[in-house]
Image 1: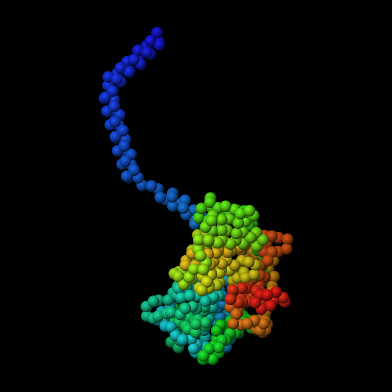
Image 2: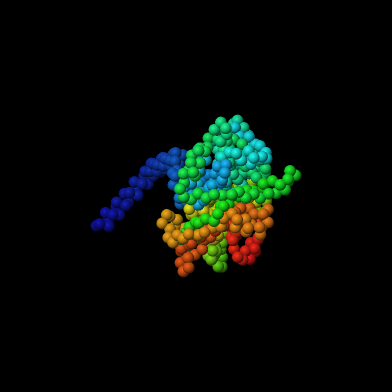
Length: 462
């Protein structure tokens, strides 16, 4: 009986559908048309959440917490005060250099004029002056930013400069000479530099002030011998501390951090047979586990292209690149620029002194605003005021330095500086000792080597 009821119900439904088929078909058609209109309207008025997409694309940049501006990585290597009788300075003093940078940030230069360099020493001999020296020649696009030079009321155009000298005129106005020894040119400008404030800092300092003497490197010209470079050496031997610092462990996570930051799409990266070579066919990353250094090479850029097509300073490009590719890691500062090759070098500073020995240099090479090579150390020191094992180290004074320099061709001496030689503490892989010493930057490749070393020969040969 139940099956008969079910059969009759199905039969009724089929007859009803058949009888009203056209009506049902019209209803379904109207529904589909309405659904199509709704979906079309939704598509036209859709507002995608680009924030989520943008967050995904910039995840690598967001991970970098130590981004810097160009002016953050430029600092003087020496500041010398001349009081008409002697030259004085404060080496290895981070707070002093930071104070000077703040003063320079707030200083305006105006009424600028380009002048020949002749006679500046005679002009300044009877004046007090403060000489702020940078570690390398800076091109005009760099020093014009650092020195906040106003474009109105004057002109400024010298190819490079590595120092600025502030002095007071008879009117008490502070004037400046921005100098290029190599180009024999300078820019003269009126300034708002707080000359007396800096002079008082040096005069009032109870410790850390040394007396210096100038050392000139001369070159022959049609007008006779001219000063090509000027260095300042402490007159007498002096002491600085060596320090020991912990370093963060360099492991696979460290390598992955650089690999993920340097390759546009890490999922396409393949490793070589040794496991220390990675490539995505457009670029390659080499890992040196012995020295804890990496080398990233961009194959897409031809290294022999015309460097004169470079439209932006390699320093600006380098700062942007590091900011967006795993960051700085250590307190690195700009230390060398070679516009002819597009090469930029940075050194880490600790307590006002660069780490020169120990493979800590960071170098980037550019052509036509495209990166060729990026080399750096993966070692990151845990730098704080509570370093352990400080020890006094005595460094040589002017007479010993000048005697050592007699073994060199002075035309090939680029720089002289006190720097740290960094080495492992015995039996402690994650502890590094920083020992101060004199270094000389020598030759066309700007190679650093110890100035005082029993087995050293000029030019870096052993």
